[in-house]
Structure formats: structure tokens, C-alpha cells
Amino acid sequence: MPPLAQTIEYYTYEDYINWDGDWELIDGVAYAMAPAPMRKHQSLATEIMYNLREQLEECTQCEVLGEIDYKISNDTVLKPDIVLTCGETNESYLTKAPEIVVEIISKSTAKRDEKYKFQIYEEEKVKYYILVYPDDLKAKIYKLKGSDYDKEGDFLQESYDFDETTCKVSLDFERVFRRFR
Image (cartoon, rainbow, N blue to C red; front, side):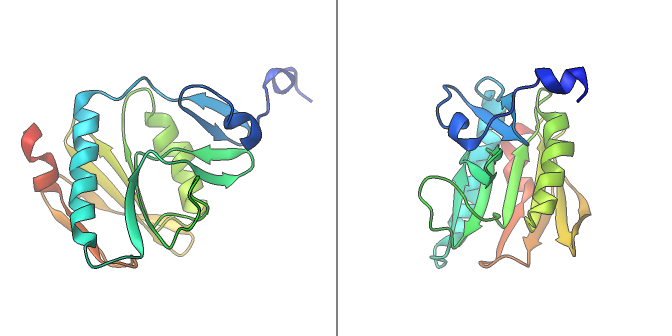
């Protein structure tokens, strides 16, 4: 075993649930979450959650949640900024892939969101992965096609219809980003 591998601690969900603060666990490695999100981050998250939630009045199968644990395995637990999940029955954490995951990018989490979590969500078959860039007022939407994500585009003021979700929803990015322009 290489010397570095001997010095890295390996953690499981049992360790994770006892920690103070906000953490994520990826393949047994603990990652501290960034400090409380900036106002712009929180406002964008609220706008996106509100936009999605108001479309679910007639859909009792789906719900929009913010910063809930998504337990993928005993050594991988992620905390997405926003999820649209359908048919989830566990009260403590998500046990199955959400239909939509939204991560709002900050400088401290960009690599994790764009690379590691991207790959995990793709492997877990999350239908849509959205990366929101607050400084650019831009969203990148990826749609699962087969076993790989395909980029649907960069969205600044356009709307996007999520046609492969249990309850049909859309996001109007002109509306989401309006107050920040």
C-alpha cells in the first residue's frame, strides 16, 4: 500500500451521522462543506425550489427538498443543494436517485460538483444534473442518455422542460436569475 493511502482515514455512514457540522462522504473520505452559503447562493436556491415546488400542486408523488442527505452506499453520502425526488419513502435520507439534482457552484466546491459528484450522479442514474453558476447567472443542464450525461445546454434566460420526470416540471431561468441582473 502506498504511504499516502495509509494516512487517509476511511469513514462509513455510522461515523458520518455522529459528526458535528455539514459534511459529505465520498468513497470513505470526509469532505467538510463550505461555510454557510452566501446570500446570492441561498436566494438562487430558494428561487429554483419555489419554481419547481409551485408546479407540483397536482403531483403527490414528488417533492422538492434542499440539502438532504443522499445515502448512496455505506461510504458515500452526498448533500445536494436541491433535489426533485419522487416516490421516496425513507424519512431520514434519500435512498434512491433523485430525478433532478441541482448544485449551486461556489469556488470552494466547484471541482467536487463538476467532477466527482457529476460522475457519482451519472453512475447513480440521476436523470438531470444542473450546475448553477451564481457569478455568471448561468445554468448548465445535463440529461442522462443511456449511461452517460449529455449536455442539454447553457441557460441564461431560456426555459427548459424536464420531459423525463414523473411529474412534468420546467425551469424558467429568466425568472430564476431576474432579481440578480
